Image (cartoon, rainbow, N blue to C red; front, top):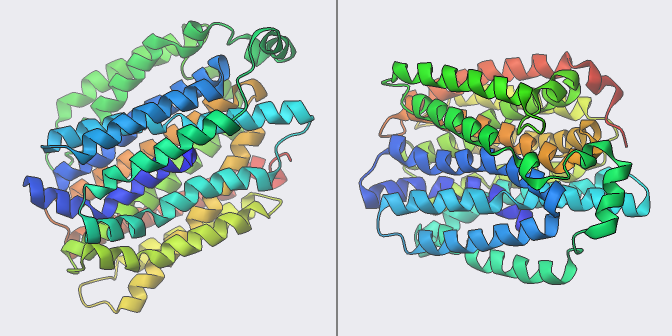
Length: 450
């Protein structure tokens, strides 16, 4: 339940953006910040909370994150202005970022207890929770907005977070402490290096990374009228960040490890490109269905239903495969096909083709989610699975920020046919790149370790 909160909120709001824009008198370029602020917060918070889960214990981090989610739900439900909605999404990105890396840490600890690596079907259940919620987000969001208004998008987090908190108190294993944690650190050099919580967090690295990512997001979100001077401080901060990460004893992003571990680095790259394409559809296509095609929020949610259902089914099927290269290659081809189809979509396109386009993006969601998760579990250092899982989500959210930037450039204040076609054409080019990156990755030929 905790793991579904972040993916659910990343996609559920897609069918509420038009209604929110109308109520507060802002356009698509402004409402895109509701997407980006959550991704900015999540991109930083996921690896940070993953490191804390490795150091402090996943149960503590998970429960603390749920309390922040409850606060964000209240702020968003009662928000009197668009600014308060941004604050709510900021808190939501931080709070929901605890669950996935904490869950991966719990699986790691359980694997140590029973003496085996968590098998793919077990990982698939975690992936199914996150992927399933992301997939059904547009449909659920459309129903909530259609029947209860856009504030229900924020209110729905309250009962889910509360239920997850209560259940976690009873069922999530207590964190390893004292002699047991010392013994685990002694057996695992990577874990031993994280014995100091303050060192493992690297506050200076976090601050530099946050600053660089924020500067990049501000530049990308106004590509129609780019603020070129922002590139100078972005480059300067990025250079300082890289130098500090190479010097720090416990860096926020271990650049040396990523350089040596090419398989893990390529997994992050592949994951980020994939979700750039997926989120272009999650947000760009749904906005066009309302603004360009004239559908209601509830109808838009139903049109996106085939994408949701195919994603759910394929997440389970993907977990049953032994290799990961085949599912990822198929997903890349389908993303290219779906993007190419959207190039020819217009106001007069038959409904059946709109449903097919959605399904073309649903199948890759299921295959990509389970396959890349298995790759991270296989290629990451055993003592740093929480932070490695967090960086996987960081790559995903950087892709999402790029997607929201592309949408803002393509649409401006209203989603029309021309904007949809521009977004689809760029997505098709990225689909070709994804195919190349997947097929040329030698590490995938041997599959992930099981």
